[in-house]
Length: 159
Picture 1: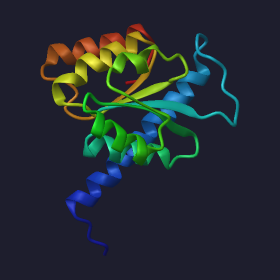
Picture 2: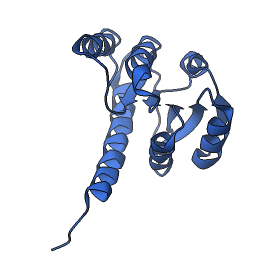
Picture 3: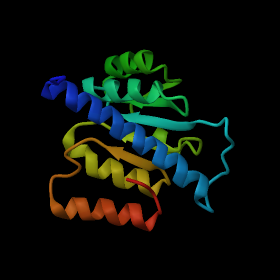
Picture 4: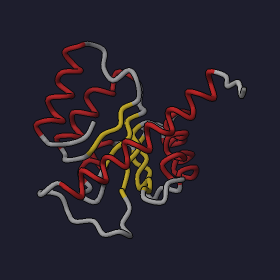
């Protein structure tokens, strides 16, 4: 029997969850009447918010998919943003998440920023019409979590 340590299991599970999130965003985007039509050769354009170790890890996992590409990375620390841009092969490194949210070509965002930014960034992303993958913890309170779900439902986005 193959024994697997906790770290390996969590890495594989996280990569799988990120892939499912991106795939779900692609399916929802293509089936949503208000979304642009996507052809078989089009990719899901993703923006990464938070360029620490986990953010880079998730960006690499998304970049390894044939149907997704990381276009933006965002971190207030320009050194980390540049490192993440190089690792993910992204076209843009920005310090303000609103630059990602304002770009209509971005279909989904991955939020791997500091924990206190998870809920506000997720809500803003839904309001901007983006699908969202949020690293844990998604929020600091039940109230914040409910606001996130309400934003996703109101804007018909996958979170």
